[in-house]
Amino acid sequence: MIRRLFMSRRRVLALSGASLTGTAARAQLKSGDDPEASPRWQQVRAGLFKGRTPNSNAGEVIALEAPARAEDAAIVPIVIRARFEQRPERYIKQVHLIIDNNPSPVAAIFTYTLDSGRADIETRVRIDEYTFVRAIAETNDGRLYMATRFVKAAGGCSAPPGKDALAARATLGQMRLRVQEAGAPGTPVLAQLMISHPNDSGLVMDQLSRQYTPPHFVRRIDVSVGGRQVLSADLDFSISENPNLRFYFVPRDDGGTMEAVVVDSNELRFQQTLAYRASP
Image 1: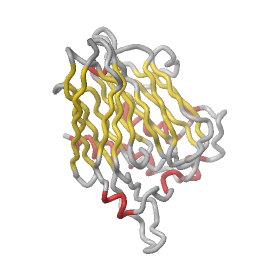
Image 2: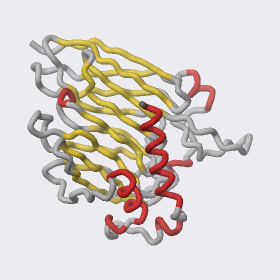
Image 3: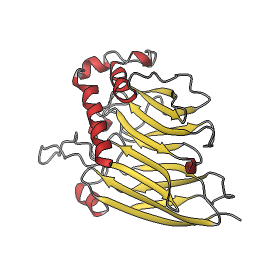
Image 4: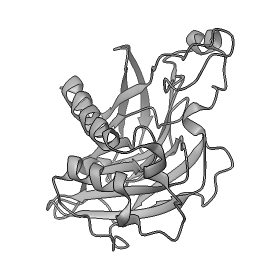
């Protein structure tokens, strides 16, 4: 199942870049340009959403926070916030994170459940050149809503890693889970997952060998609490080195166990658990 999802997204990415040269895709791109006019976005939209056009008036559904100009193109903070909690009558099923002008524009697809509590996510991404960044939420009635930001950054996908290869391999797959003090049962609680992983994009040249480092990145994350899915994420190398996710979940009863399972592009599998207690 994971492989089918991954390969399906790869086909979308191939289509999105096949007929566009880098110059054509980014020509004279400015913050005042029409986000809907982006050729890359039009191709990604056709591949992912089968011609459906997201509603750009997303203020009551979803909000996207990103810097107008990034301090470091390899570590650009992104915050996606839902405007309402997950309820049976209305909830967000998925959020797509799209970075138009990245080599891999579909950076992440986050899937939520009612046990997520809130369909929020905070993470860090690489940005390769000036681009529109999009968060597209699909609600349980099948409607799409899009929030867009223009970010000035360049070179993030080909930036050298922060660790050397030996150091990165030594801690590969190590994870930390954190949970804020849980409130009353049924109240969403903030959690954080940190993963030690180089998330190699395949676009970085080794200065000694003059060869490109092969791509090797986290491509799937599943988080559950007491066996109930809270969050799943299909990712690509647009996510920064050492992926870091902040998200919500709904605790039950007096506590439980949170489990995170991570699979990378080399089929390596990592797992971490954390016992937590809810407040009385």
